[in-house]
Length: 113
Length: 114
Image (cartoon, rainbow over all chains, first blue to last red; front, side, top):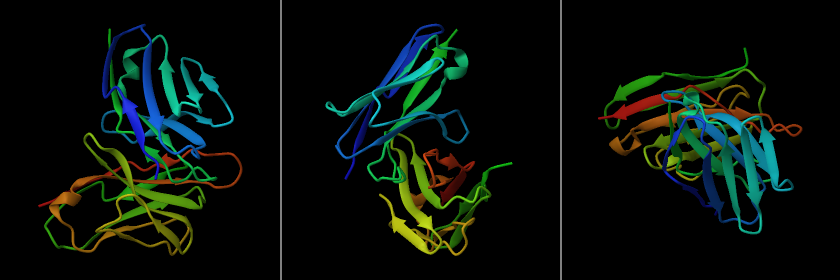
């Protein structure tokens, strides 16, 4: 079955810097890759996602890139702000409906001002 | 307001005492799922359901049961809870029509089994 590895497990940056979180997946049939943000004590919330027929997607300060050949995808956050501090999870799904998500173990991002 | 609700939000129980965590969504979603979240392990899927009366095992189904008698409800049942089921549990739902893929998570249920 699918296995998703996420790195780093913790990441500390200064406000205004960029942050990059990387994930690799094992199942070449995976075709849907969402990123979730979980603030302390809150539920995970989708921040951006990408399908396998797209190489990059951007939404304001957040972007996701996908390299299908290498089976890895990355989350890029530019101009980080303290409110970006949270745990970020990547996930992958190989079923057509994108339902059975396999999550990475999470990255704790700390943005200091 | 579109939402996924879970009850209870917090529960402390003892080994072997059957319990049910309820999950309900008001978005008419076909798909519902249960996850457990443990430190350093991320979110792991327990069970999921593609529609009424259709359920399937996720990655960590042992010790859990689910049912999907109605579209809006997807309760998680622990017949004989054990301490290793102490965890934070999330229910999630999403629609299967069109290109909308987002899973909406409930607020979580923190379960402690003594």
